[in-house]
Image (cartoon, rainbow over all chains, first blue to last red; front, side, top):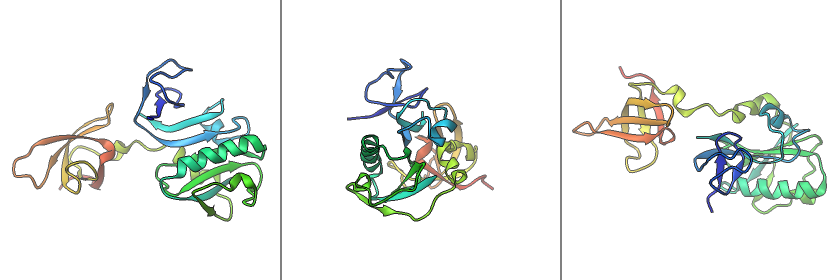
Amino acid sequence: MVTKACTRCHRIVEGDLCEVCNLATSKNWSGFLIIVDPEKSHIARDLKIQEAGEYALRVR
Amino acid sequence: MIYAIRTLVGQEKNVARVIARNVKNSGIGVSSILVPESLRGYILVESSTNLDMQNPVFKVPHMKGSIEGEIPYTEIKNFLNPEPILSSIQKGSIVELISGPFKGEKAKVVRIDESKEDVVLELIEAAVPIPVTVKGDQIRLIQKEAD
């Protein structure tokens, strides 16, 4: 199964549309980040991620 | 605090997913797990407490152990904002193709399409110069500007 990433929020999803932004997703992504606790995570704060989940670092 | 965990090459994402799932159920202080593309065989775990590798949370298939000590946050900042591949390449640069049918060939950059991250190249050793369009991640910079 091909995983895709939203071009705006970088969230990793399985479908062709991001459920949150309602935008097209892209197969072409790299770098992988799992946010478990967005409130405590320094990385999430830096990347302005407010929800837990799986994210790509670079999407095109 | 950030710690590095060694994994089997190619299994980084799977290990990260399993650890993330275990962490959620156990309530230990891991807040995020980072898998940088450029760092093969390692994952970076952000945690508010010391990682106890004896904890069953970290008993995951394909994991090969951990690296002693912490990694300063400033060192992983580069992984968070990967530099666009094409930023260092300019028209006239000499590059090597690293994948595709022309793998190993050297070429000169003719044109760059930054929005699509496409590069138009001309193979140096070809008898007749034919423009070839490839993606920016299929090339490696050899020489910034042709003499």
